[in-house]
Structures are given as C-alpha cells and as structure tokens.
Image (tube, rainbow, N blue to C red):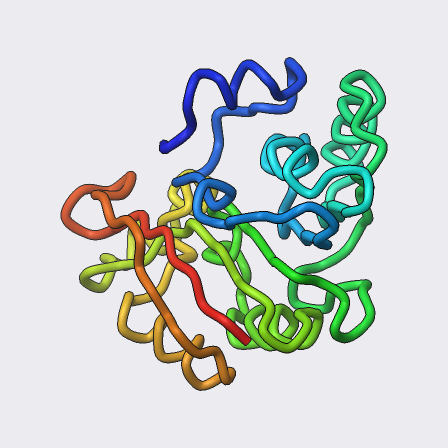
Length: 204
C-alpha cells in the first residue's frame, strides 16, 4: 500500500502487521527536529519510518488505545534502538497531548474506526502547531453501505463499516479549519464499488 521494500526492511520485524490503507509517511516531508504524532500507532510501523527522518532532535509519539499494541510497539522500539519514539495510551477522540505540540500528525486507516470523526479532526487541529501538517491515509465511502454490511463486525475491522461518505469526510476537515487540502492518492478500497483508500494532507 505505498511502502517500498527498503522501508519495510528498515522497520523492526513484528512492527508491520499488514494493516493500513496507504503510506502517510511518504508524503509527510518530515524534517530533522520535528515532532510527529501517529494516531493509532499499533505495533509502531509508521512511527519507526518517521523516527530516522526527524532524527535525534526530533520526536515521534505514537497513540494507541490497546495495551497489547502499546507493549508490542515499546518492545519494537527497544529492539530497533528507536530512542526518539515513545508510545502513549489514549483515545484519538481525546488525545493525551498538549496544545500546539506537533509539527505533523500522521495516521494510517484509523480515523474511519472512530465514532466521532469531528472530534478526531478537532483534536488533530488542537495538537498541531500553527502551520502544522496532517498527513493521513484512510478509508471513505463512494456510496452508502447496505445495513447488513454496517452491522458486520468483520467489515468494521476491515475499515469499511465505520467509514463515512467521502464528501462528508472532507467537509469535516474543512469545517475544522484546515487549509490546503490535497488528495495525493486514491485507489479502490477493501469493498470494491463502495470504499476508497485515500491519502491526503492538510495544513493548520
């Protein structure tokens, strides 16, 4: 989903769970010294790709709500020597971070799972510095889902049944106050004919 073999080889084994719908780090233009927040960081794969780009003077903060993923990510960070990456437990609808902290927020196929996406975008906006960038890969819908799919737990974990219509999704970003919205990549999603995987950026 947009990762090179070189990128996959650099990340610790066990950090790539084969999940996600794009590569938000590829468009992040990360610079040494920047602070990056990774929403729904899982076992740390995207955080570990960001880590060398921001260097020792920078920092990567992964946010995940599950103890199991946090434990895996911390083990992987130790194993790979990623001293500038830390992982915190938290809900992406109420981030455990101060205002104006991050230069960049990244996320890979996680926002679609949040019940209140408006809150998520509000939280991203809050923790970003003025001029900070949001770089996200996520799933959106091109037409409404049948009720049976909406209620299917497998479709939720496949990042489909929690997704909303593309126009509604982009409108939430605009209403939050983000500028310079740009869709960099758009490909068919897991449920062909209904979902799209989009990789986009926007600026606070």
